[in-house]
Amino acid sequence: MHEMDLNRFETLLAAYGATPNRWPEEERAAAEAFARADPRAAALLAEADAIDTLLFAHRAAEPSRTLRAMVIEAAPRKRRLTGRARLWWSGLALALAGAGGMLAGSAATAALEPISANVQMYSHEEVPALDYSAEEAVL
Image 1 (cartoon, rainbow, N blue to C red):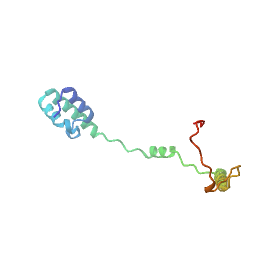
Image 2: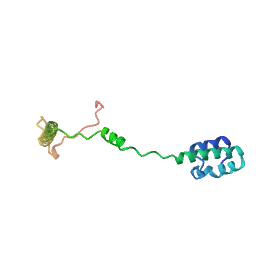
Image 3: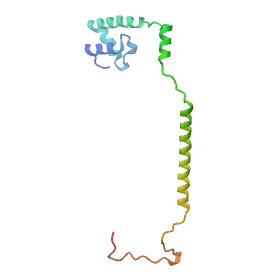
């Protein structure tokens, strides 16, 4: 059970109202005992209960048809693409697809084409042995 004082009790009432079921479970028993034992707490609880009654009794009025129509009229509408804009986006998509195809074709050609640099080719048996014991090797 948590310690309860008038300041904490008032904070609970301000945050959760006068109904104990809405109070934090770990503080509920201490707050209820404090309300029974302290006349100032009982007065605060009665005041919070009166405020809760007023708040729960309030009902918002149904919006009028005129207000509802004004809100719907003011809402942003989904714009449809005009013929020119649709043609522009289609052209852009076609150009991007073509550029992607050219890039893929270029990459595939470069990967499959043999390297034409001046490189000496050796068979497995002809590979010269490398000498790593030389002191002149630079790291």
